[in-house]
Image (cartoon, rainbow, N blue to C red; front, side, top):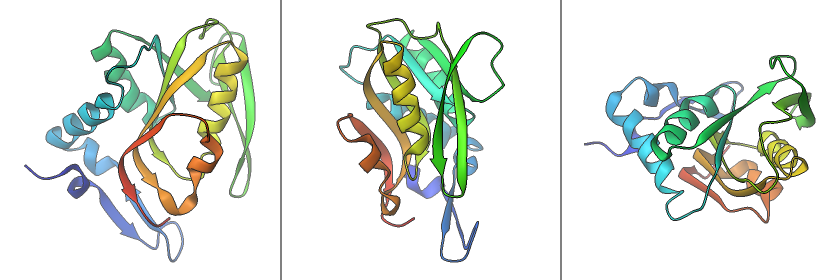
Length: 174
């Protein structure tokens, strides 16, 4: 069987020249690599006391829900502003060109709950940093953050200092 890294499609010069886009859809389209990605991300949570899995749309849903299911834990979605129907808490964060706002239901995390955040990729870290702030403002404790891919050249971990962060696959560049 191939290594998980071999399933990730690398697309040069997208979205701009000099960038190598790491496409996870090729992982999702193959049953073996999908299983490997879920299993390897889930293994990063071994031995931890976790109450809730949190994942941002959309690929955090794809990887987070099966992990939550496997561990018999609740899953909490984080959405773009205006997509959740009940009372929410929101956080604005910086993008490369502007800002974005994410939301979570106000009653999704209870004080004292231990939370793992699952997402497909860490680039600059802004989205996950905003999610940690929302979780902590609701009284939750972020005990682990797991990514399938880390783009080390973008230094996203710098925004997550003090958190237990893992990535299954690491690329040196952007």
